[in-house]
Amino acid sequence: MKMAAGLEQAFVRHGFADASVDTLREASGVSLRTLYKYMPSRADMVLAALEYRYRRYMAEVLDDLPVDPTQARDALMTRIGHWMQSEAAHGCLFHSAVAADPANATLRALLERHKHEVATRAALATGLEGQGVALLLVMEGLTQTWPLHGDEAVSAAKQLAAALAAGQP
Image (tube, rainbow, N blue to C red; front, side):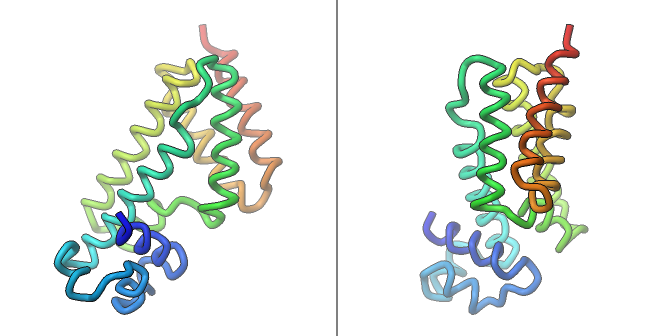
């Protein structure tokens, strides 16, 4: 867990292409031998960092949302704004990983799995079952516009989610 946390931060700071092995070893907090024992390749290091990031995101953004769907929609968008402010001011780390290695089918599958679970859980929590893709579009739009518009993007995402909910039968 500690190694993955360090790797996550190294990839956030240095990117996937520019993080040297020495930087990754230092960030992991273990010797190079130990790092390679548990993660024999750079690809394994990337996957470990992304899996760690994924668990943190799910816990901070989607766990323990209010039971009321309206309150859950509001809390969800607020939490994404907080996540962006503290963790991801430059966008989604998963998209960055795929952009750095677009031919990597494993990374692509991880991205797809992550986004599918986010959409499914968010739709269920917000009373938008069957609207997961539309809700994900709002959430991803918030992620992409937050660096430029901050709280204004959060407010707009809340309005769009409410409109989506109002359009349901």
